[in-house]
Amino acid sequence: MKIRFILNPKSGKGQADLETLAACIQLNFPGADMRLTKDAGHATELAKEAADMGFDAAVAIGGDGTINETARGLVGTNTALGVIPRGSGNGFARELGMPLLFEEAVMRLQRAKAVWCDAGRANGELFLNLAGVGIEADIAWQFMEHGKTGQRGMWPYFKIGAKTALSYKPKNLELTADGVPVKTAPLTLVFANGRQYGSNFKIAPQASLTDGLLDMVAVQDIAKWKLALTAPFFFTDGKRPFGVVQTAHVKHALIRQAGDIIYHIDGEPRKTKDSLEITVEPKALKVLFPEK
Image (cartoon, rainbow, N blue to C red; front, top):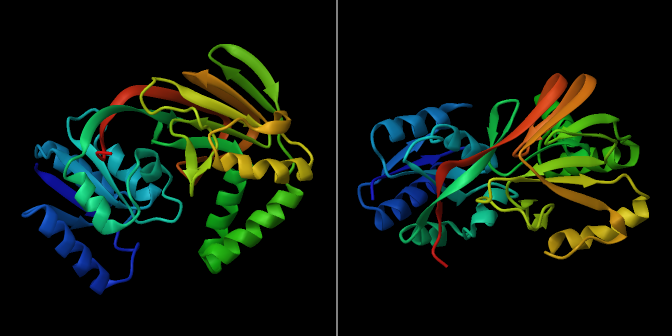
């Protein structure tokens, strides 16, 4: 199999770590092509180049952002997307069943199976796993802004998240889902191609990457104590109690809200004006699933 590995060097432990990863890749895939990303968007260029050159697969090594960028260069081609997780939540890698240990993930790729999978689009921009509006999008936006001048990492993210959780007020949205108008003010509204954000937090436990649909999940704004009691259920495949979650299968949704709309695609924050369109693109790209 002719494979290009696309690695985000910012994930990991420096040059020594890169040399170890490269040695592992060459041991399992002798002669494999390995490229390092230089800046935002470079993974897309490298993936598109691999597709144009007839590679069988382009394997993204990094977090969900690197994986998303790589996938953008492969949509509509016969070059499959492979994934080796090197991020924090690793939502899409977990969805595929990829091991989190690097060496094991590389070995599992040797017998991976290519499957045509769906992708979503938010205002035309590709997402593989999740897109949405609401509290988690606001937290992601605040964390991005904080990172421009302040410290990044888990502790600042936790502080921003805790502060937002206490003060966040859901916004009134005009939602049209597959032609049906709905007025809603959810705590969060998620469009799920995959099942989870990452770390096994499953927002849409019944979602499928291959059914041609998105799971539209609305989490209601209920009392904080009810949300706290509900939280452990999101780490299971079972139903959520207290009527906290409403789920529907959709192919198209349009969200209208006067002014700025903050949203996220695969965890990366975005901002638009007045409307946000969500669509699904069935069988958009090949994805390598590890053999079980």
